[in-house]
Length: 162
Ligand code: GDP
Ligand code: MG
Image 1 (tube, rainbow, N blue to C red):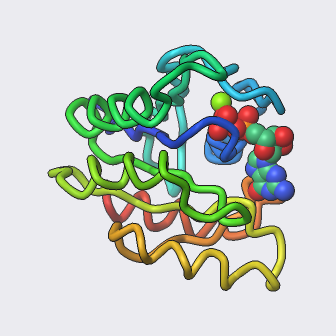
Image 2 (cartoon, rainbow, N blue to C red):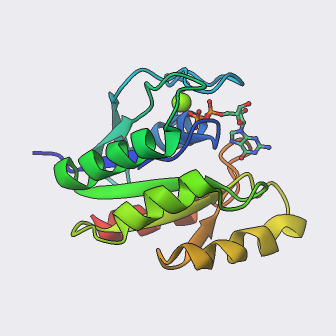
């Protein structure tokens, strides 16, 4: 069976944009409106000659009550059903209450968790990425899913973890 990688994180951090970057195709729907991704959509991916499956998550209502709880539940399910979890945070915003709720769940994960500091579009925002060490999930990987910055290094780290 091919290894599976789940992408989790609160709405609008760039999960679907990152999925498209990882799979090298524009299949995941990217929207400015949060909550657009339907629940758990899978995509085939290939990197360094190895196949894996990427699972994009989402599916909550944009302004549902208890967003933190809902997203944390998705993280919980991801760490129990996939071989690795990529947790995406918007570094330009910093860690929110919801991000902290997700991190709290993922700190108990038995499968590898990789922390992505997304929206690091240029050097100036690298410090924002470093601030995410505070989530207690190890080293934040600075990337710009939109422009592709850092995505090669991230993919190498993903393959090493899986
Ligand atoms: P999702 O809800 O987590 O799946 O987020 P999306 O992938 O739909 O992206 C939400 C918004 O963030 C869209 O407007 C994207 O274009 C934007 N976005 C995603 N990645 C980046 C990035 O690396 N830099 C910037 N500046 N914007 C990004
Ligand atoms: Mg999405």
